[in-house]
Image (cartoon, rainbow, N blue to C red):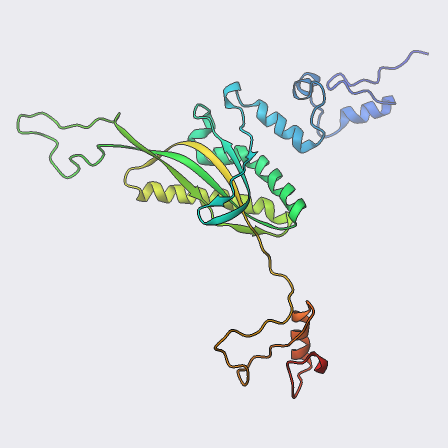
Length: 279
């Protein structure tokens, strides 16, 4: 009996029966060529669809446009704020996407989502923000003769050189946002990117001739996050009347303060309202 070939000519995958091979060839989404798969995964390639998609997108970049990697640093302060974690990715000036801030952030977005996802698995809630450090340029003589007559008395025209540039490094930073669920990670990163774009546009329009030159660095800052939690009885602030002030401050010794407040509203006591024995 002649053995029927059960190997796909396109992707090289072998099937147990000829019927499975025909179903594979007739499916809606065609398989990828074998040579393309070998380029992505020469030895042990990506295991998930998302990783294969990122590998394909990275192949579209040239050798000089390699994607930088975020590295965790030991930085623990951002100004006067204490950081719980800090990640930095340095951008090379010769890469093509460094000239556009949105392209820079979108190139690094898969890494941001992975860092946020791993952080949430570790802490089940954290605060984060993104800081893009950019080099801004402007012509040093951009205000020269702006209100004067460029034509001199001898008929010559006053010009200024476009090659004399001033530059400075400007950080564009978001406000910290608390992330309390996995579903908030992707929308939060999108809002970070949009916010940085609006900050850059505002700086260009109100920055007296400054324009965006290149991206230098992208930082992920995670300040210390202390979410609200249950607590026991807390005394009223000093200076506030303890009686006849319209406040029922229940004196409980457990962490069920919110539950006691709900019970006090549903079943109001007529006297000694601060005691839990009346609820």
